[in-house]
Length: 438
Ligand code: HAM
Image (cartoon, rainbow, N blue to C red; front, side, top):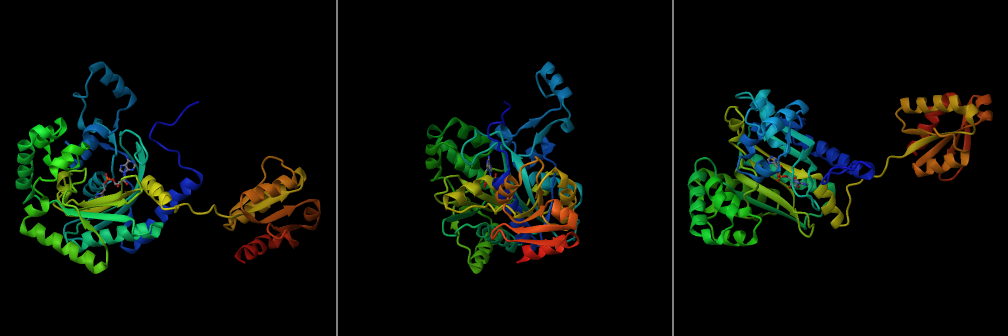
């Protein structure tokens, strides 16, 4: 039997409805904040991710699924390396949404100079070649937003307020949610800060892992979230970003906190929060469900340099993404669920094969009127059809037998009371919709 790839899931039934529910809530809430939906391709040039996410990140170095067409693959096997590939031939499945959306914004000139900002949201599958475990998949789903063209700290605060409201509307109790925030500085103050952290790691070289020593040279801030516990302990004494911000970054951070306080959003400041993607500047944030046991259920931040890295004009940006699968797990741990009930339907039952055409017409008429309608396609007995109707949650059954056909009528059976009434066939739709409205 063919099997799905490890770390991937099939979405169907209640689980699929849960994913759709997350999108419906997002459409409503993010729409009220002025965001429109966007969809970018699942494959992009590798450079789109390398420029934005950063060459030295785990996501780019270890987790990106590379895509090669069949013919190219043969070639690569022959040559033993991708050195001969043009940038346009070096493709990857998107590990996250931000880089692709920003690439699309640059390519489609979505934020022309002097124009209003672009506010975009998406609900898409993402792909990361991580070791699969609970809440960590190789194909997972994110709902995310990207707000391009707003530098104001109010935009940072609005994003965070909207994110916390999103969790609430999905059914989370706010008390077990922990929102952590930090500021990572910008192009003015970060280089000097990075250098201080690099020096700190080198001063503690004998206590740090090999990866951290390598990070010291390419991206020392990554050591704050090294998977090695001891490294993280050593890093507790490292210089903190918040003590190394330039005046503008410090004021921006202070203003974001003032807005969050005014909006009544509780947060903790975590000066070691650096996030796993290199494009962040200034505000970063992450949300965890305490006792959820699945890690972060969402995160984001400001990325004022990313548009330029993707070849556009300098344009500030901020956004976040939340993971569907982790949210489903964290909600379940709270005793909640994202699942919405299966929608009810009307069932059209025929007493024998002779009524098949009348059943067919009645079914189509109801569907054309927008009523979710089911019928029998297996030649089942009337009793089995009623059982099936119950299973599907039908509130009304339309029964058609020889008497009904002769009288050009249908019988409506209330599936709860089993009460039956005959109505003229011409009144089928109005009689059914009237009963459903009760
Ligand atoms: P991220 O923190 O890498 O940020 O991912 C956001 C969320 O996606 C995580 O908090 C988690 O819920 C979920 N997630 C990440 N990796 C996995 C995985 N392997 N399996 C299941 N769920 C996962 C970003 O992706 C940024 N693009 C967010 C952003 C948008 N920043 C600015 N704009």
